[in-house]
Length: 110
Image (cartoon, rainbow, N blue to C red; front, side, top):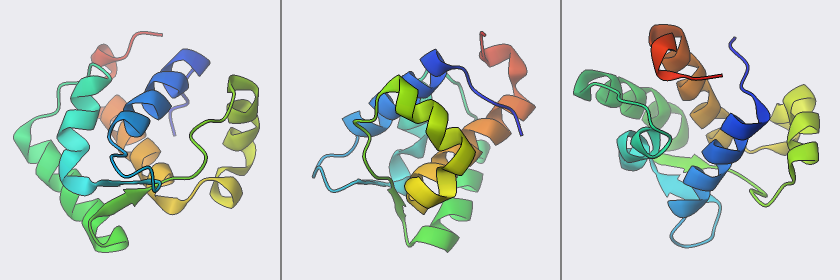
């Protein structure tokens, strides 16, 4: 799976935080298109629907995450043990980003 650099991870966490309206560690899966746009990605409507369906099946229409206030150093540690520390929802968001990166590498600047 494609890896992301520290700057990208920081922007993903910040974007996710911006959509966590209730500060409860979750965002509505219907916001996935806006989340991707916020990190300067341009998914098609078909791709947005695909990700909504895929995530919705597993998470009952919520993307969840924990402790988005992690420092960059902690993020590096999380890459090694992500499933133990990050709730499934944020892991799903990263999987969406990784899949999107495989489909559209030109939209990612390293």
